[in-house]
Length: 202
Image (cartoon, rainbow, N blue to C red; front, top):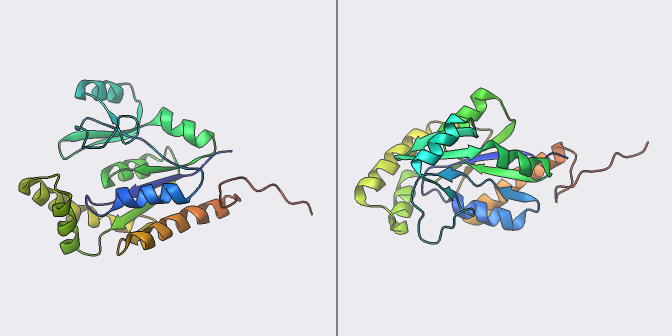
């Protein structure tokens, strides 16, 4: 039995990480696709759990060998999704959430190697996004301005996504995300917890 792939994108500071973590706790057989990146790990992040943190030359070797489903350079760092790890989870019947930016989502749509439902998570407005970025305390002023400019450009892409979730409150956003996942399972004739429904005898 093959699971389903869900792409989730959001501007930095929109609350995506918190929403995804809570959805993982709520929905069974839902796993996170761990991406590779060349950026430095933040406080509390672990290699293999949050990202695979690799050197730039190692990442570029993977690009050359065709190991990535998609990859992009964002804010000066590489990010990419390794095909082998993704397909292994799907083949085991898990639904996989792929946390990527709008560039990566566009690549997957255009290349058509894998079918996915894509979901965009947006902040209520620009002012709340800026407030959230400042409260994180992880970026300097120039970085915040860069992320806000990038967020505006990313928001212009949200109409390309199958679903849009506005993060007014975390709990409502988590409920909407899980509802999309459960609807996908119903479409694929699976139970709420992801098991295949046996064919019913006539």
